Amino acid sequence: MWLAQPPLGWWPLAWIALVPWAHLAFRTNLTRRDYGWLYLAAIAYWALTMQGIRHAHPAMFVAWLALAAYLAVYPVAWVALSRVALFGGQPRSVNPSDPSTDRDSAPSDETSPPRVSSAWWILPVVWVGLECVRNYFLTGVSAVMLGHTQANVAVVIQIADLLGTYGVSFLVAMVNVALASWLIDRQARRGVIIGCAALGLTLIYGVWRIAEVDSMTSGSTLRIALVGRDEPIIFEQDVDRELEIFDAYFLESLTAAEAAGRRGESIDVVVWPESMFTGGLPYLVADPQRPLDVPEEAGMDDAAFRELLKVNRQRFEARAGQVQAALRGATGQAAGPELIVGCSVIRYHHPAGGHSGCVHVAADGKVANYYAKTHLVMFGEYIPLIDYLPWIDRFVPPGMGVLPGDGPVAMHIGDSIVSPNVCIETAVERVTINQVRQLIAAGSPPDWIVNVTNDGWFDRSSVVEHHLRCAQLVAVGCRRPVLIAANGGPTAWIDGSGRIVERLANDESGAVIVNGATDGRLSPYLRIGDWPARLSVVYCAYLALIALKSMARRRRNRDRDLAAQPDVLR
Image (cartoon, rainbow, N blue to C red; front, side, top):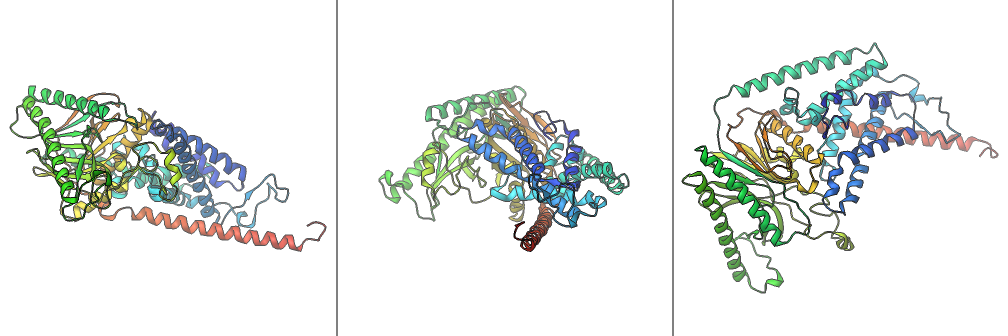
């Protein structure tokens, strides 16, 4: 499984990677030691896969190991719940160190062989159900789903517009389980036949959907410059360093504009990564219809503080206007370009606090709108229960602790609508999917999804590539291009088929110029959402209840048998 994922990305191995795991599910007797070894192997896999998060800060070593220990539960749960379904009850886990158990004997619910002929759909349903739990529990971890192994196989991932990444995961798991079933019982050919048929239909659907969009000649177009660099990032960053980063991104944008000017091209939009536009001047906001939370250290009343916010807005817009004027001078265009830039946003209406934000500066140099990140990173942007455990503050690095935003925002640029998001919001699939659905329901269907992210925390590790793969599947699920401006990560243009049209290497500085049309196809996944995956969760919960009931029954029987023994044996 690790070989099938980045950094190596040997995707064909994903189609056989679950075969050994499925063999564990088919075994008549599985010891507690077997489960223990599986759990340790899963911890090693997840620790190696997610090791990039430890680079963000020394304190993240604890979070990294805790995350690996948590995620390792899911492979064990898959084997355990699959055995419940296959054997019609909770198979006993034999403890070889307990002399009261016989390793070679099977309990009454294991006297018949497992239902190998039905495994081709049972085990994939359990797999998808557990992936769905993982995508919601503790705010959700959607990266490194089984379906993401196929991110660069365009004809396979097109079914993500039907069922999301869950659909691709189900297909890959089904082929694995069908193969494992056939290896155990050569008469179990039904699963192999169905798996081959499903894979064939998937390829046919993929070829059709890709050909459909490739034949389109119309659609909303924008010329968008996605600016990327690899600026080193630390938690304890001061204003001087912020200004250095701002200047570096300004010069990179100017270089891209000069190149466009030499080609006789204009640029409609320039996109900077998360927080790169702050430069010691965060954008301060307050709703005029809501009371202010004026900081005590400000030492002024509401009216005076609102005037201060007005001055901040003027300074912010003046600086943005200077950037726009320089870019116009390089391209020779009459107006613009508009800016969509990652920038810290601080609001002073209740509840007051900071946001990881994205600010839209219109062609006239005025702030048109801003988006505040809604899905925060646990242990990266907030600490759960920190209000109830104040002593944790001593171990929290400076700068941690931001507030979630209110919801999605539609940024109007000409006749196009952009849906912005920040950082891992494309890595948690449901977040972006739900935002697009909300904008469609509000009458502002987005043409583009723009992600501004700072992946410099992860030091060019495979975590960055996992983020990119999530964005590829999101693009298919929404049938909208996903544009990423990243610091220390893949600045990339992904089309509505999940194909990477152009990208910068993670350590490369430059700009990707997007000049293609939007995707006009419909996505059933946007209509139905992840309800099929949630039904799989219900099935997993049903199996868990069966397991608990079986364990309770065996415990009662054991106590009864022990009570019936003579005193000398007891």
